[in-house]
Length: 256
Ligand SMILES: C[S@@+](CC[C@H](N)C(=O)[O-])C[C@H]1O[C@@H](n2cnc3c(N)ncnc32)[C@H](O)[C@@H]1O
Image 1 (cartoon, rainbow, N blue to C red):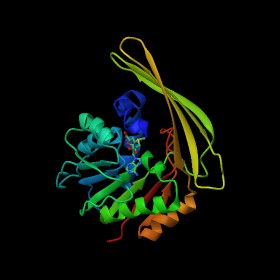
Image 2 (cartoon, helix red, strand yellow; image 1 turned 180 degrees about the vertical axis):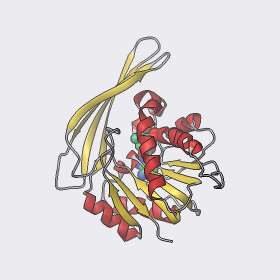
Image 3 (cartoon, rainbow, N blue to C red; image 1 turned 60 degrees about the vertical axis):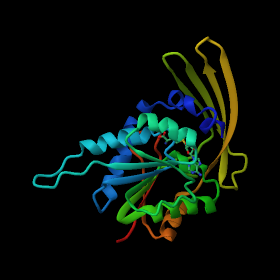
Image 4 (cartoon, rainbow, N blue to C red; image 1 turned 90 degrees about the vertical axis):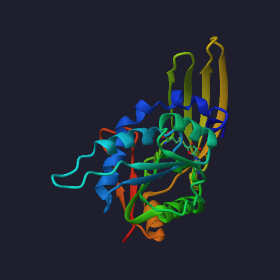
C-alpha cells in the first residue's frame, strides 16, 4: 500500500499524534482494568506511525503506585509493523521503543509480554482465517494472566458507509485526504475505502494520489468466538462517550 510505503513520510500530517491523546488514554485504562498482572512490557502489532505508543508510554509513566507498593517499572514497548517505512516514522516519535518489522499473522518473537495491543491495523485482516492468525500471534506473545486488546475501527454492527476528510499543515508542506467508504458485497467479510491524498509541496505545487484499501468486517459474536477459540477469556468493551472514534474493543485475558 502506497500510504504505508512511498507516502509513509506524510503519515504525521495525515494522522497527527495529537489526535490520539484521548483514545490512547482509553486503551491504557482498558488494559489496566483487565490485566491480572502489572503491565511492564507491551507489544503492539501494526503499530504504524507509533501515535498510540507515544501517548501510552506517557500514561504508563504517570501511573501511581499505592501506598507501600513497589514503584512500577517503566513500560517497555515493542512496536511491530509490516512496513519498514512506517517503523521509520515511529522511530522518530518513539526513539526509546524497540521496533521490529513483521506481519501480525506470522510474527513470532519467541518472548511474552504483559500486554498485547492492536488498534486499527487489525482492519487489514479481511478474512476469518487472517483474523484468527493475528489473534494466534497475540496469544503466542501474551504472558499468563496478561491481557490483549483489539480496537478495530468498527464491527459489522457499527459499520456504516460514509465520507470523511482530514489532514494537517506542517511547517513547509501540508496534506489533506478524503476517505470514502462503501461495502460492495455485504455477504463477505470486507469493505473498501477509497482514499484521495493531496500533498502540497514547499513550492505550492500539489501532488494527488488515489488508493483503494480493503478492510475486514466481523460481527461481535465472531470476535468473541475467535478469541475464545485461541484460549482467551474474552469480553467486549462498548467504547466511551469521550472517545468519538472508538466503537467496540475486544479484550482477552490469557488464563494462568
Ligand atoms: C492505520 S496504520 C496504524 C496507525 C497506528 N495505529 C498509529 O498509532 O500510528 C495501519 C498499519 O497497519 C500496518 N499493517 C497492515 N497490514 C499489516 C499486517 N498484516 N501486519 C502488520 N502490520 C500491518 C500498516 O503497515 C500500517 O502501518
